[in-house]
Length: 239
Ligand SMILES: [Zn+2]
Image (cartoon, rainbow, N blue to C red; front, side, top):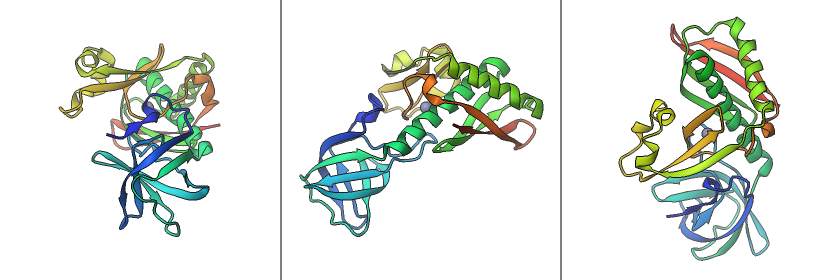
């Protein structure tokens, strides 16, 4: 299995590794370890570069397939052979913006559950903007400003964001995780990574987040849309 630095250290932006597999048709390589996030859970993949003997190889797409995290390289560069030593370097501006945005989504999710009892059903993000879907029948325009203000109170409260990797059985005992449908996790998964905004939100999650809510900045709720009587979509921006 590839060692995934980002699961325990989201702030690692440069690392050394070796090429573990190469896929010439896709023009992609897998590494024995990586800090590149492959996308998932609504968070887009990272970009950046691999450096081989001082030559820069742009990483244009990253995706998990079976046991490998594949790093697609720009078409004009030569694919490094299996065993080659590389330095990986993330596009940190993009990654950090995604960490702030992803954490903002958790804050929104936590506030909406705590104060309105509405459950999240999905979401997607790009750097500094995102949308979340809720089962939130009573959402109306007057609430949007209120939700935004409450989110910004939680940012200013500077809550720590705590990452833990728990045995499956232990995670399945936590009521907040059961609420977020942890029971849908595939049988084969023996450990569950949890992301807790201390005092606000706890989820099973494989993405990257900032270490403290103060790093998020400011959340603005920019729009909301009705997707039916119950399902509502909230749009946010982070600045
Ligand atoms: Zn998350």
